Image (tube, rainbow, N blue to C red):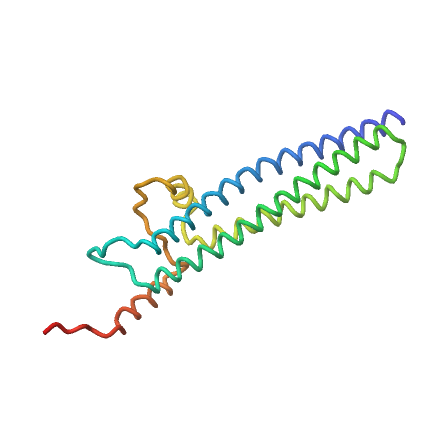
Length: 186
């Protein structure tokens, strides 16, 4: 191999290593978010099984159903995002391995294969980040509020209830409360 080919191969290997590190960092964040959502879903299921004694303003059943449906949707999006992150990391490591193999063996056909793995890994990482952005959109909270909520999940004092996806769901639950028959005492 010439000096120019060796330099290009080293640059390709460094790109793959950098991509692997970026995938690992993104994957760790996605996994932490997935774990927090999983805990939030478990807490929500436990509160449904053992509801708190009725307080001054109990939340309607429709509110809980809507919140649970949206939480499951976000959980599914996060699961697919984490899966895409794992695939992106795998493809980045494969690209690095193939380029290293190309350094040992003089097979020029390994370079397009490695570049293909690199491009697929980059596309898969972008899909994982896109799914996370869709999840943040469905959370209907600001990024700071969402981060603070996930830091509070699992603690005993989690004062904020789940919010429905939009104000439309809240209006629907108010309408359900108004349409319930009033109980007469007497």
